Length: 308
Image (cartoon, rainbow, N blue to C red):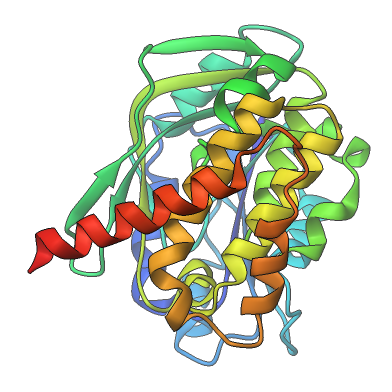
């Protein structure tokens, strides 16, 4: 009999965090799962650590690439192709979770046959284990229609990493592969595409620990400025698809420009013209670009004055 859940751990050079990640999966109160371990040709001690789990009864596959795939989403594809479960949990290799994660997510997604994903809240954890921030939802449990969820909770995104989410495998073939073009925002597009296929369960419980450190993908993307390119492109796509209106578009555009303005001098010069062009040509004609620009400049100047 196949397991209810397939847990996929796609790893690349996360040896310092792997044992905590895998052990937090194996410690789940719900044990109806298989564990698929993937390594994308790591250059650290990851493979040695993963081999320790090869004979564990929960581990159905351990696959180590001899050449780096160059894409997180290629590893997703590989794991999903091996998965036997009804539900998928992409447990990112540098995160960890509470023992009740799977139990809680299954309770949520089973509430309705049309529910395509269930997600919880996350602690944002720094390299030394310091709690930097935590996400929040104002209800303990909520089931939301997909379109309403996208408008209310995906502009800006409220699913911060894949480790927070349990989702239905049978919907995967229906999702367009546009998301694989992106290095940073591909999962944002993926969750939106999945939410369009049904309902979404949101848990207000904090069950995921999202580790932030210099070696993860998001850190490098933020340093280069690629996040602004991808975020604005996804925002434009959401508007062009009719998933959000002028109000939602303008809110995120304003937020992104305020983030960009004080960082513009430190961003990769090769990307700066592309970012500026995206800001100059918002998809929503109702976006007050001049007012937003002036507001960002004033906000930045006021912040500098306070720091003196």
